Image (tube, rainbow, N blue to C red; front, side):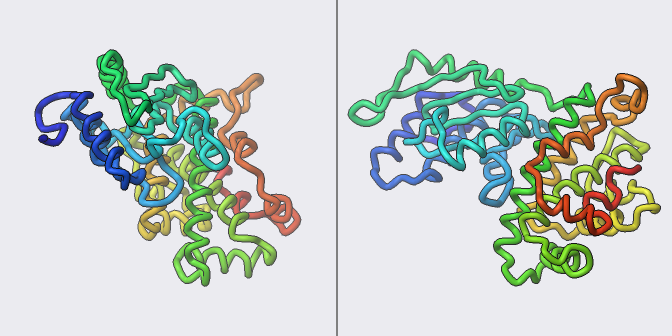
Length: 334
């Protein structure tokens, strides 16, 4: 049997047969079904790019990312085939909440059940097989899944048209960056990496009792609002990148400029994808037009208000007692 996605268009029956073969082998793991899923997604539209595991890490980004050109517009989280994608528990439940807030065009699937989520709200659910004496296909639902996948692939890249929406999405991205930073620091137990060195320096000079998790919280917040400050000073809204962010930040804030030299060039692989996702969010917005009424009576909240929606860190309070933590070092004052 040939692989999906070789010019045949979407073939749900062929895809499910590949899944069933893996399932009935008795040796399949969650990742055993990924090639079939990847091929199914690629068969939707040959003009799209589908990336498997864009995050290169355990926990900050869904398993698949759809791009049109170089702009991401869709994400898929793939669970093991025996997992209920709706009744998730524990970490998976909390992860889903973060993903729903951060990714406006999202699918949750276990390979046979597909839930489509738009702007944080489930919009459609379809199951193409039942677990009865093995895996029994439900061909009456094949056309429904194909239509939903094509509709998913037709979604446009995000375009931010309200300040409140931008603030919400920035808070969601900051929470995911925080997760990735925590993982990176846990893997660097002796803090020998560039990120670990910054943690040690910050702890030695400003907050002697700062924990790695608290540092991750402050650091994620600073990256997020530093990125906003850079976009605010950007003179060419048609482009934006980590390198541009570093160049666009005002020289009057040397701390932030120094941090973004690291963000622009020396980020660990696991963080590149998450921060680049934030870059795409900034690229989809025009802060000047969104916040033109900021400061006037009844004005729209500034993105800094989104910080209140990120899980709080005790370090913020201690930072104030010590003359200001990292998040007070300037990214919100442009």
